[in-house]
Length: 169
Image (cartoon, rainbow, N blue to C red; front, side, top):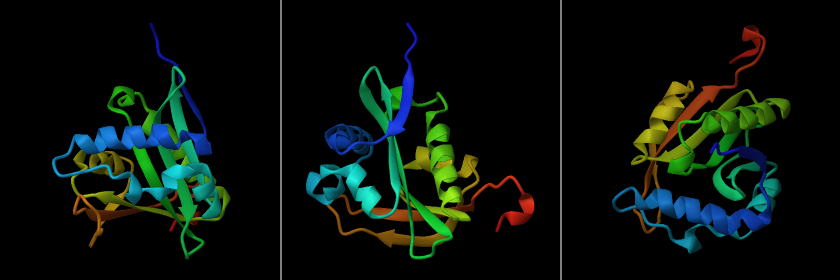
């Protein structure tokens, strides 16, 4: 039996499902703990990202949320940041992360952005490979989060792909 995946805008009611995905992914990494209080945006995730001027999408399979990705502008209107880039292990290897990334990139481009950036936990090696395969470059900076997991993050960035190579920066 084939599983059908559906990409849609997130709803505030998706918060518990997103929390479940994040908790499962964090559990794959030693010392990475899901602490609900550290993610208050999950109480109303769609409203949270809309309030930032951004958008959040989820992927569903069989009526269950299996992935997410958000994009929002930064202080520099030409740079948009990616957030909540998660995909359940059972949904990986099907091109869904690329579809989410393409949706976020198209949205950022429509809003005038010329560059994407993101921060990712230094332990998320599979995610780093995905970003690098998709044109992101790791910057020579790291930041520490004051969280229960003692998280350190890498920064990644890349230009937004345009139809005209002369427009890329």
